[in-house]
Length: 319
Image (cartoon, rainbow, N blue to C red):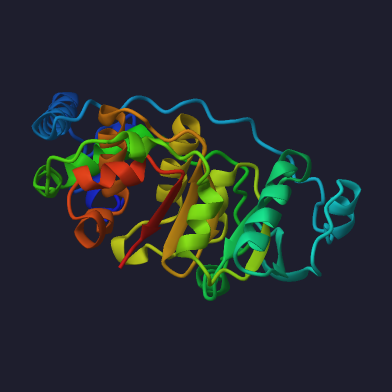
């Protein structure tokens, strides 16, 4: 699924944001023409969701307040020690897009890694450093980043409305979305019951490659792929703003938090995944719009994706 904020919709975006309507060739359009394009966009969106039996995407929840980065550019080892956390030796390995240092520690894979992640995450509000488990090559996008002049001030707001992103994605390719394979799979009690099997248990089933923990200065966790210039989904034209939009949305609705990145996978732990069939179907569609390989090279049908939407760990892989 291509980014709905890509080049193909640049004129539509400009028309929506500008006080002067603009056509594909850059010329002014009548306000009537703009209104007509909005109506067509809404009609496509409504028609596709109706054909799939999915309710309209509900608005995003308000994001959590921004967190201050307390350590500044200093090695945060002593800061964590004052909070009762002994970290492995840290190395400065990179800088975020806005120029703040990223610190890395080698960790033992498996439960030792997830245990440390949880302890560091528990004090995020007091440090401003988001913990992230990474596999080799996860930071290649940041290593290749060459700023033009001064680095960006990413403290400034970026467009990150997930519901609008999803609506654009549906209208950008309605045929593909409407033809997503279906089946007769409903959620079961077993799908909903995660007692005794948490996100860390699921993580230890699927991953044995993430042997580094990095600390990323970030006002919001959902900004981390953007700040790291992560390009794991670049074959699908998704950029940091796209990831921020969906991660922000899922954080608000389901308590989803970024746990790990590799070269081409992104993993979230989910505190409150959907438990009813309609909500799981809606989330399954959102996941498909974000990463179509979830169906085409994974679950096989949108309905078979529902149990994964109801799970406490969400992993996305882009071919």
